[in-house]
Image 1 (cartoon, helix red, strand yellow):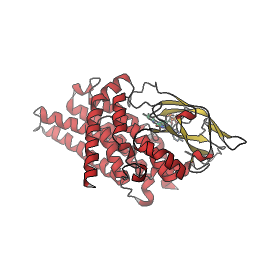
Image 2 (cartoon, rainbow, N blue to C red; image 1 turned 135 degrees about the vertical axis):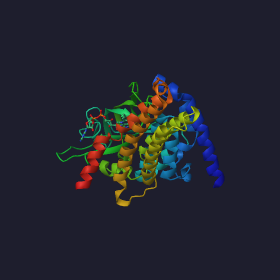
Image 3 (cartoon, helix red, strand yellow; image 1 turned 180 degrees about the vertical axis):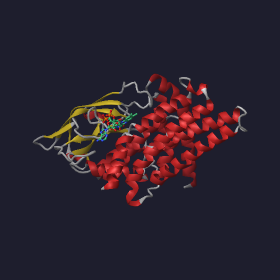
Image 4 (tube, rainbow, N blue to C red; image 1 turned 180 degrees about the horizontal axis):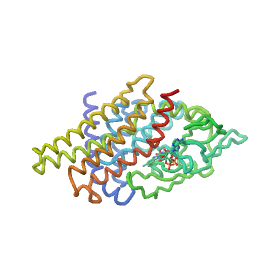
Length: 371
Ligand SMILES: Cc1cc2nc3c(=O)[nH]c(=O)nc-3n(C[C@H](O)[C@H](O)[C@H](O)COP(=O)(O)OP(=O)(O)OC[C@H]3O[C@@H](n4cnc5c(N)ncnc54)[C@H](O)[C@@H]3O)c2cc1C
């Protein structure tokens, strides 16, 4: 066991070293670099959550969270690609049939296949209502799916997509991800094409863009969860220990380290002003870490789903603040295009706008609190 953990550590160190080399090129060109993706696939770490019987590392959510955090400190774009992969894996682990597990987990564990989540749409973005991606059941029982998903991270890279589809009719009470919607696992070769040329402001190396479902013909065996089971599956995601807060935590840690290094290396260690500023950043970092680790350790009992959203909200808001404060400490040189901190700040902003946008996540929690 000790040797296995040591070997995983070495894999992670080697992966981070490689990602560091390609992160700014990905940001500059607005696309992930193939060498970075190859290193991620090779690392074996995409199989963190997959049980060893399917060729994975059989680790828990805390391990996966630390892995995401570490990558985010170097390249947050690659971290969200890995995050989406792990969250699809966790859905297959929780809801997948024996056949789905057998078919997909070995490929997803060793990095031969990448997985992505395609829930959002233009016009049904944050709240996932009124989806225009619809499935119609044919006489032979198969489903015909057509539509376009927006903001899919890993678009064009993934071999397998977890797609949220309208399978019934919304009523007036329908809320975020409702019971007229179903998740399907759809392979790229079943009729998915991608357009990731979205020119995002941050997370530019995440291949986040559109996927088009062109008359995909799929069977009921491709459901994740049951027909109309979207709310249950979504709730499960909130309680599985994975939180985008881990991405924000990695960004915050990296920003803090850049500020600390600046103070140390520029002979500023004795400045009370900077000591106090660093102390505040460190305090925020500790608070974020406590919350993210709490979720990843699945502490919180019946409140875990709520705390998971809270950790994402808190961590993403803190990471923007920490990046901005780190810029104040370092000064103008950190505002130069292409400097790591300048990139981290743009990447940090994106987490507030995803999974879902913080404003909506707050509303969902608020509703839960009063009901
Ligand atoms: C970098 C990045 C990566 C992403 N990756 C993925 C991914 O891999 N998969 C995926 O499915 N999605 C992904 N998303 C999409 C993300 O999760 C949100 O769905 C999306 O950003 C919402 O944007 P929109 O323009 O569609 O917003 P809209 O849905 O149009 O929302 C706009 C505003 O309206 C508010 N709003 C909407 N509905 C409600 C409501 N019911 N109550 C209160 N306020 C509401 C929102 O808070 C928001 O402020 C990603 C987004 C980004 C930025």
